[in-house]
Image 1 (cartoon, rainbow, N blue to C red):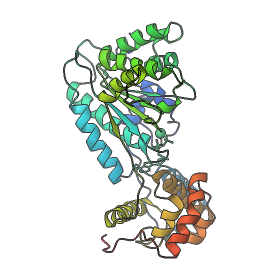
Image 2 (image 1 turned 90 degrees about the vertical axis):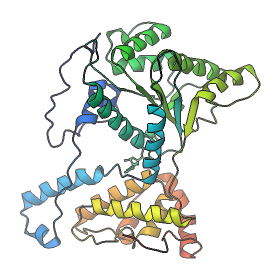
Image 3 (image 1 turned 30 degrees about the vertical axis):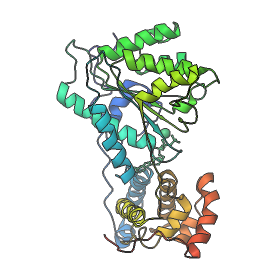
Image 4 (image 1 turned 135 degrees about the vertical axis):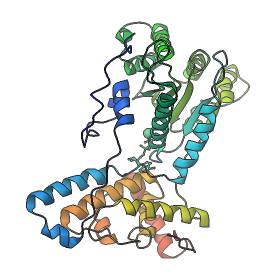
Amino acid sequence: MTARRQQPASGEAQSADSHAGLDNLTLARKEGWRSFVTTPARSQPEPLSAKELRRLGEGALAGYNKQRRIWHANLGPLKTPQLTELHEDLWDIVDSNVQDGDKAKGAIAIDAFPGLGKTTAVLAFAKKFHLREIAEEGEFTEDGNERWPVCRVGLTGNTGMKDFNRAMLEYFAHPGRTSGTTAQFGHRALDCMLSCAVRLLIVDDLHFLRWRATSGVEISNHFKYIANEFPVTLMFIGVGLAERGLFSEGDSYANAVLAQTGRRTTPLDMRPFTVDTETGRREWRQMLLALEQRLVLADKNLGMLADALSDYLFARSTGHIGSLMTLINRGCQRAVRTGAERLDEELLNGVKNDAASEKARQELEAALQARRITTRPRAKTR
Ligand SMILES: Nc1ncnc2c1ncn2[C@@H]1O[C@H](COP(=O)(O)OP(=O)(O)OP(=O)(O)O)[C@@H](O)[C@H]1O
Ligand SMILES: [Mg+2]
């Protein structure tokens, strides 16, 4: 068993920017997962006024700007209402899944459009879950193996069942991950999960699974096998899972098999921000207020995002957190580089955003300008 009492990954003492190099690929291995979980949050660079900036020497200014570059590129995760709601649902389901091993556990499918923060929210949840399990149960299992409460598998283009099983073994760096059949890989993965007391199996980007017309049943059966045999809560993340028939019900044989997965899987959603209700507008504003507090720009003022740019930012992001964060990140980089030190429409107009939000932007801007819609709540609370 490879996970038996290894040295802690890369030393627990982390340098100031040990986040660097943490990519999705790193998370494919348990050691990468541990550094993701144990690396302390970055601290916000100290805010300096325009005058203080001018007083900095060249070297000090370059250092300060580098700090801000990294900081602005990694803002988040913000506690958005979407993230908080999802976490509540996840705790309900995961904590209710502690029944004995012979009962199949309820699975979860987080099914929503790209860029709404599914991965971000799930990783934040899994991090809390990992830390709670370790705090409660200890770093090692009764048998002396390392405890790994979470196993995360990210799928890539056109993954088949065998690759999926192999990816689970990769996470544990199992020596038997190079050769074997699908079933053998499956058994080895089960072995790892039992030894390491895995409780949560996250399968990100499930839509990448090879989904031939007939293999819906095969996939469904495979996950049923995992749900039955592995003592884990399965958490699927993907785009358009319902349309792909992960949990459709019907009368044909195929549908009946799929329905079995459907009966055990709770679909959860993540929604974009919307501004057609007062509650929605208030949520948008609260999020912008939280976001502007995190910006480290010398000329920023209270309400820079939440008041002055509320409509503009909504039009450019269409309420998608991913597009918003890209725009703000790029805007801040430009504001630092050019010395503007604040965000306004003029500066942001020069910043490019993703194709989908640029496409939706014009229509929304026209509606906002014609005052057919607004993003501002009636009562402004700070
Ligand atoms: N709560 C949040 N606070 C700050 N930034 C966030 C938050 N949620 C998402 N983001 C940002 O939005 C971007 C997209 O998020 P994420 O990758 O989690 O979306 P996704 O729904 O998993 O998308 P995909 O379907 O493409 O995988 C990321 O760059 C992330 O930094
Ligand atoms: Mg994702």
